[in-house]
Amino acid sequence: MKNLKVFTFLLIVMIYLPSCLGLDEVVYKQSVRVRLKNNTNNTINLWVEGESMNAANLVEPQAIRESVITISFNVTNDEFANPARFSVNAGFNGEAIQSTICTIDYDPTYNKQERIYPVQFNSDGAFSGF
Image (tube, rainbow, N blue to C red; front, side, top):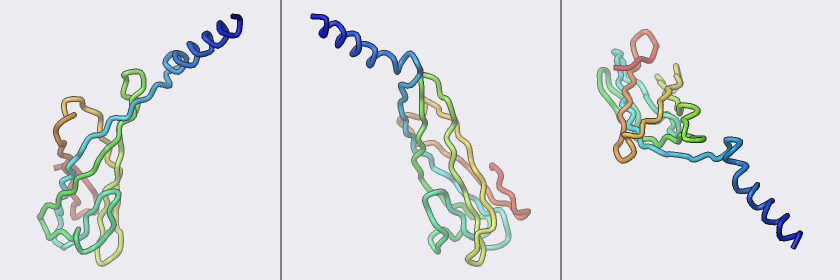
């Protein structure tokens, strides 16, 4: 009987302790359509994390290329601890010339919809929103 009580106590502790310590983590995923604009006078490569520089991501001047990525948000205790991050890159003549890290917050209203995240590469070599 004593072993049953000890077992029951340990089982209860194993079930509830992670919640008490904030260790119960849930991962939410959302699709994000990254809209990449070439705001320069040259044809350049624009690509997102998970892709590589190639002919498929060449973008003419002032044109837009889109890429859909899946973002994961780690949620602990119903609080969104950290925004998700992904990289965007630019290249010219086969060489990577610039990259930036984009940050996106979780938004529960987009659970069933795709989000759009606009990024443009400018003539001064910097990324910005548009």
